[in-house]
Image (cartoon, rainbow, N blue to C red; front, side, top):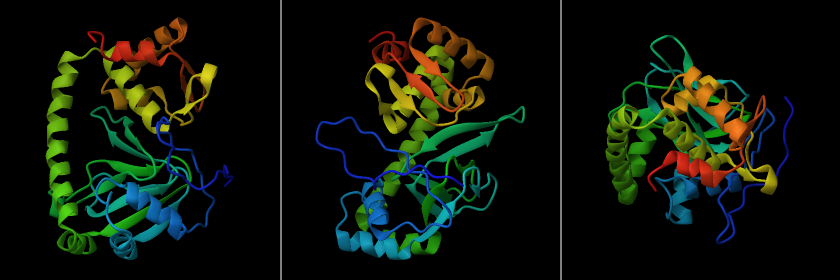
Length: 263
């Protein structure tokens, strides 16, 4: 498999818009220690921990590389581990009532995913797979329990995260009834722009990820037909531009107004 070479991830300079360069890896691959420590320090559960504490967590992690399209786990499988994206991109997906598999999120280095019975999720509700060649760190349930015992602040963050997930689930249910398709699509694109976007000036904010209309519909909690109509209109109006494996946000301010028309 070919690879796209970039430098190792570096912290953004103060005041700079936070972007994550795409680093597609070549298999076989082992994430080097500096990369593992850097992404662990950025992971929401572990941010702010000392280097010694991060090193102890890293020692409990197992590293695995995945080829583009390779599954990390399937929906319905027993959930017994958490993962951290170290390099590449990971997509989460689920199957809709009509049997269509749609993307629900795209994860970048430093983001956590997976589930555990100890956290109230005995089975994976979504599937996870590598969107491009990727590397992930894995910690099993028993090892994670030891981390929670040794690092009380991590345990508190886990509790806060579980509560936030429940609140988001309720918000999503309400949002589907009150928000328009345009609002939901705009918010999905803005989230992707913040996580994956590369600002190319007049060319817009480039999202170099292979997302189909069905994938974007999953992110926006809508249908591919409705999303296609919205994207076609925005393309004519100069808000976005699309290609086979990329999407460009050409006018972020107008897209933000579409997301929150009352602001």
